Amino acid sequence: MKIGIVCYPTFGGSGVVATELGIALANRGHEIHFITYKQPVRLALLNQHIHFHEVHVPEYPLFHYQPYELALSSKLVDTVLAHDIELLHVHYAIPHAYAGYMAQQMLREHGKNIPMVTTLHGTDITLVGQHPFYKPAVQFSINQSNVVTSVSADLKKKTNELFQLDKEISVVPNFIDASKYVFPPTDCQRTLIAKDSERVITHISNFRPVKCIPDVIEVFDRIQREIPAKLMMVGDGPERENAERLCEEKGISDRVVFLGNSNEIDRILCFSDLFLLPSISESFGLAALEAMINRTPVVSSDTGGIPEVNIHGVTGYLCSVGDVASMAKFSIDLLSDSELLEKFKAQAYAQALTFDIQKVVPQYEAVYACAMASV
Ligand code: GMT
Image 1 (tube, rainbow, N blue to C red):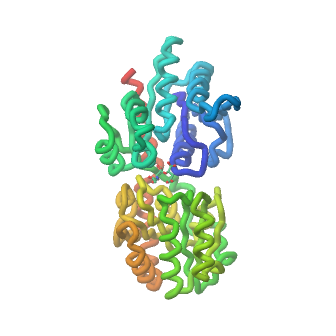
Image 2: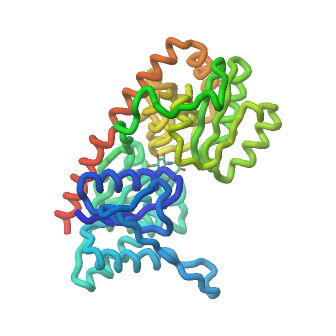
Image 3: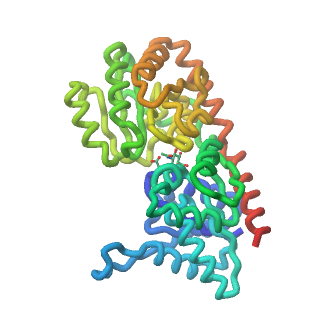
């Protein structure tokens, strides 16, 4: 099939999922066209099966806000017509489903009826999409999609509670390409970061308030008072400066490494002993899955779709949002018992395998078949 994928090209989970899906679909013989404002960060190589079309938004001084949706929908029309694209798959409803719907309408004028699949990722529903300034447009464009998918059962439930939808949502979970992970990993340089006697704890996110960065620091502080440990903070965002200041105030800056955004998270996760994810809200928690495929257990909050990924007492531990005392206690108990830690590492890996890309991509192909049949 010829598929147009619309996503955010940044380090956010929805862009990562869209990019990895596009690459996997191309490997299965589909022709993939990414249509977005920048080449997606996880998209290293283009080839005859993977194309990238950049959306330009010309600056015009009259506009206080440059109209990206307009430029995107025009680019979708041009790209669909030029490459004979058969289906649009938009990731993150805002504003992609809206732009996709407009493109569908314009394409009708050209005699082309193209289906649109919308994948909901989380904050497009639970946070941004709830704002009264956006909600009517988000609800409308989700309802206009031919097929709607969500990345967890919890997100499906929340979407149905928060919006009036006349569509059944299909749950297609996020995934991981297990074939990329050989054990033991070949390029895993733990010695550069930590001593043998130290445990390595990692957090990866876009450092937005929803990720509860101060809780990550607090839990780590409590751990390092009991066990020699280092904290790897991967990613960047509005909470980073605060986090660095907090580490200074607590006198733990020498044990915390801020690495910024990275395309090489596996090279950090491969030597991590524990992953912390204390988010207020998380539709799935892709970062937790990426940790688990690297045999890293997860101590997380029990919010949203996380319990569908991280199993309490098996792959890590789940605690209430903000319960840093329990998060620290579970972490210390696990990190101080080498035998138990090894068991959890193996169990985390086994659970991650259930989200292997080979199982999930056919589910998207089935969704595409459904969407094609609906036009
Ligand atoms: O978590 C983020 O801040 C990024 C965000 C995004 O839209 O890129 O992630 C959302 O989508 C990911 C991929 O489906 C999920 O794994 C994350 O849980 C979800 N984030 C939230 O719900 C806060």
